[in-house]
Length: 313
Ligand code: GLN
Image (cartoon, rainbow, N blue to C red; front, side, top):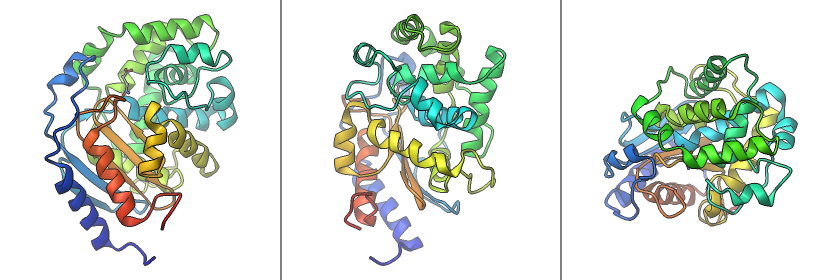
């Protein structure tokens, strides 16, 4: 297959955007009340290459909450601080096949907090960050995500408030993990920092840049800063491949064949290792909490460019 040209990248982004922009399936998340108020029609599609070149269509500037797309990046922080082995042993890497907020998963895998891409493992990852105070913990989490995006980011305070006030399910998970000695800080502190992490505002381009940093073996292509050791990137991508879409991860591999992560704010980032990232933003979600336009757009691009990891290419 011929090398992908600049014109190819722009063409597939434009096509994916126009093909799915009028699709009306799915609904905004509303269990975090404020997410229901984000305009559902907004849609952005971007490819960012490992050299930092950007090809985009649609909404690139609106700042939405990163939500669960933050999870692999904080898992990366644990790898960078404490090694991939610690992440596997103290949190775990098995996909659950269950929804992102499952409590049942905790009972199924008693020796682990499951994996860092579902709520339980993500709250545990936040609790595992080496920190001397809550402020220090938060600064490390935010600083790491900023290094991936290549710019300063802010918390969407209204999103934080809306989620923290209604966090009964995640509070239950944090307390349960603490009881099983699988949470490594005060549970309420971990819950607050986790919820702030999920409320960080990013735009579609930022998400593409974060993915491009993984495609570029852990170095942000624009700032040149290394965020993760090259040898840890494959492990992180492996967890994204098996668990990035929660109980729809198999379906996702079938569709796109790429490691990816979704969030209930409507973001998705997928990584073509060593080449580029594809990111989308569109708030309406399917039953599993994955963006309907986004998953179709990325599936389309992966097929058109022949970059699914399991072929054909
Ligand atoms: N902050 C959200 C939660 O904890 C993240 C969930 C998601 O994006 N799937 O419920």
